[in-house]
Length: 202
Image (cartoon, rainbow, N blue to C red; front, top):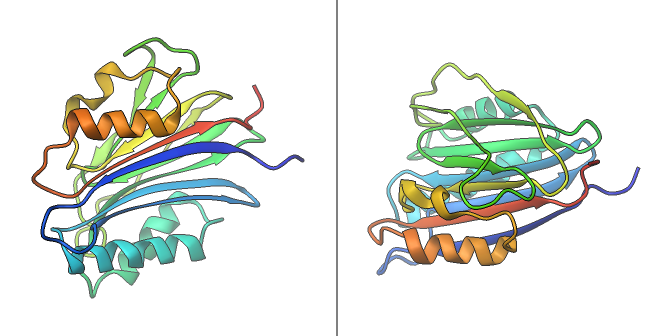
């Protein structure tokens, strides 16, 4: 089996006066597929960043586990922190399937390959809660994916209308930069993560 491939871009805004961002991301290709996550530490500044970084470490350590058990692991591991909201997805290139899950308000959109602006999108259903303090009942959704599909995760520093002008023809980094430039609220840390599947069987 050839190595599953993704191409991705990230754009970040750090709240002025803060040393580091409370918004973090992870894209990791492993034996079972690809793990993608966007994480927003509660609040901003160092405590938010340490909670988000702790979540990244937990996810890296368990990268081949199912998404629900990964969120439960994060919940247990982050009890001593402020907690985070996060959305994550695992993609199995061999089967052309993606499993995704969101707790809190990190929005997720999947754009189908070749779709024109605003067309044929799947939107991640988010459940209210905070990983590390109040975990909702977890239910992951499974949807088919194909080569050229593009997954976008944005934290709440990005306005909710970000998905309206997206085009699957743009490069991931350019798309991430444009989302940040056009939709950053400027009142909180912000992160846009854009991941295109380049190695899924069409």
